[in-house]
Length: 293
Image (cartoon, rainbow, N blue to C red):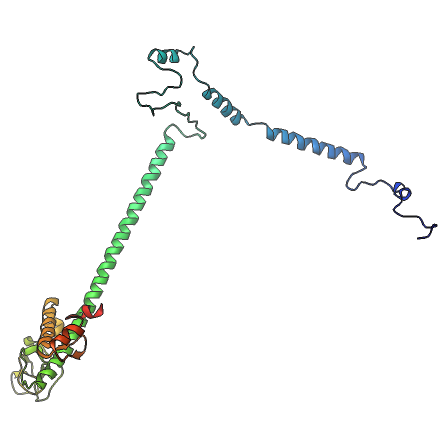
């Protein structure tokens, strides 16, 4: 820098600059408005700092309640005659009340006891609602259990009938392998009806042993013949779907035990065992439930 050039940071240059304060108005009217606004803000802050009437009343009330009853009080004099001393509890028990009962002040326009009554009604309504919800839930649970039971019963009946039909065929096959021409129990083998000498797969009820002939038939009554698959005569078979659950269970048990004891065969395993010991060791049991576990 040459000597002829003046340093812009020198004191002479800085003193020559105009003192301008940003944000500060030079207008008199504007300054007056700012002054009024600041006074209003200060007054508002002072008002906020002052306690409200309710706060003053509470403060005075707490101060009055915190003071012990003076000896000049007639009530205190009466207690003193009965042996009461300042700091003692009221009553014989040492944990009896020492502090006076707290005063409850109402802040609303409800009458005396109105809040407690409303609270009781609200509680009662809630209890009634909860009771109704519980009853509905219990009823739904009962209906659901009944539905599941009916569904399970229907499924079980169909399953039992299916097992009986399969076990009858297995019983016939195994008995024939052992040289039997007729079953040990009449219904242990499948039974068919035959009117024309042909074998039909449709079993019929004993109640329908005779059927009404067609119009072009000359015989008054035509007797239905029941046979086994080998042509041997059989007794009338009953429809399994017309038997009750107890009868179906008895037939299932009879076939199960016959196949196990006579042929060492388990329908639920689908296997024929060589020895009794092998059947006992490898078979889960004599029921479907035992095999499903």
